[in-house]
Amino acid sequence: MPKIVKMHLNLQKLFRKNCRSIFCGHRTATAAVVITTAAMMFVLTSGLMQENLRLSEEIRSVKKQMGRERQQLEAEIQRLESNADEFQAQLERTAEEHHLAVNDYCQKIDSLDKQLKSDKQFIEVWHIVSQVFNTRCHATV
Image (cartoon, rainbow, N blue to C red; front, side, top):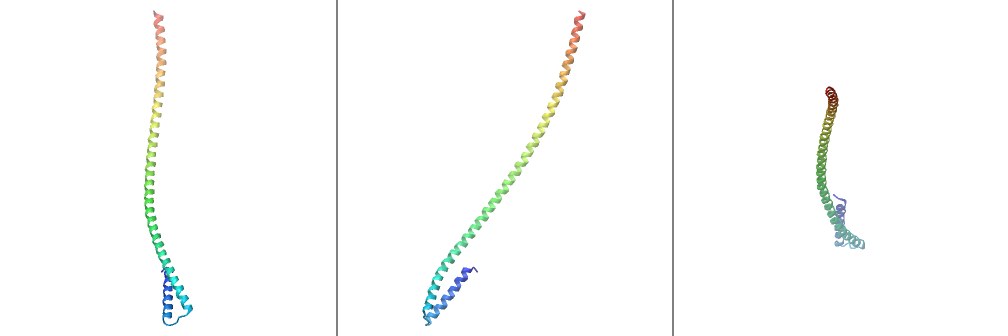
């Protein structure tokens, strides 16, 4: 039981007790002051209890809202992490494909360089052979 509720119940008991003593013929100034004080405290604590209940309800409501928002944010975080993982995997696949394509192009370039060297050698040999042939043909004529 909350402390404020206990205080309220104690003030109610005190108020009833003092009311009985006044109504039973024990009218004293002290009893009147106690009753007045008790009545004022009763009114004040009633208001405080209502405010306390209202604030408690507001706290429960805010906690519920926070719980819902927390769940939504956790779901959003999970979705974003999943998207990040998918993006990472796609990026790695793309990098691997790029790496393979670069290696393939490098092999093609090496192959074409070898073919070019071979063709150059053939042309040089052909040029030498044709010069020798032309020289012999002109020498016999």
